[in-house]
Image (cartoon, rainbow, N blue to C red):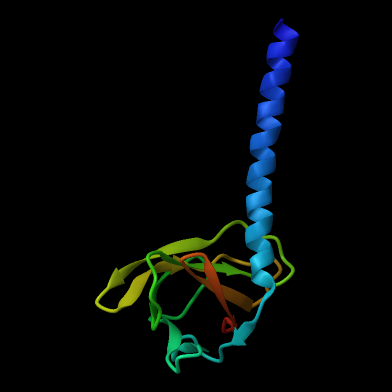
Length: 142
């Protein structure tokens, strides 16, 4: 009886871990789409859409590793919005930050992770109600 009980718990644990892994992989697979290059996030990055307006991402302070900086996103209608930082081809811990809606835009604080390899080629994904808008930018070298 104890063996059957333990086997049941093991199966349940494997199902939960599998479901979490599947969700993570599904989210990562959504990131394989279009990426817009952004020369200077302090000046703003634009993602054009079919209606002629554009989603705009802007950093209000320079992004520096492990330093808090302000981020604003405008030009998008959403119920939830967040920004996520990562690098192409590099496994990193999650760096996703929720933004709050304020007077026609979304604002919040983010922290850029540190790359142990010294790379500066970042990608920031704006998640608007689960839809990804990806930008790539270069963090200035110090």
